[in-house]
Image (cartoon, rainbow, N blue to C red; front, side):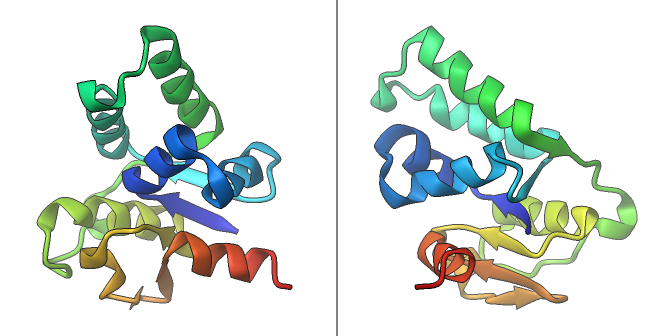
Length: 137
């Protein structure tokens, strides 16, 4: 599956672990293709660098290197840019990345994105919804 992952999911996976960590395991094992943009990575670096997470330089470097290692970088061209679709304009970067990458879904915990549910065939899913799809019981 082609996926775009919101920063809040990366935080959950790398800082807190649990079931959400399976998302990173899936793209590391090439079961999914992760797509990123420079704009998404700038946000990831900014958020992971916050003192409240208390990451050492080595831990910070590991997270960023891991995401960049497995992430397929895409460029959002003018034809991929969308108008205001969600309540928080800062979240549009995830949908635009998904459009540019022809992704199947955006995985997020952000209610501003989740209220959209779908954009041009790209599903907006919680981590649990995504994991239920890829690992049905």
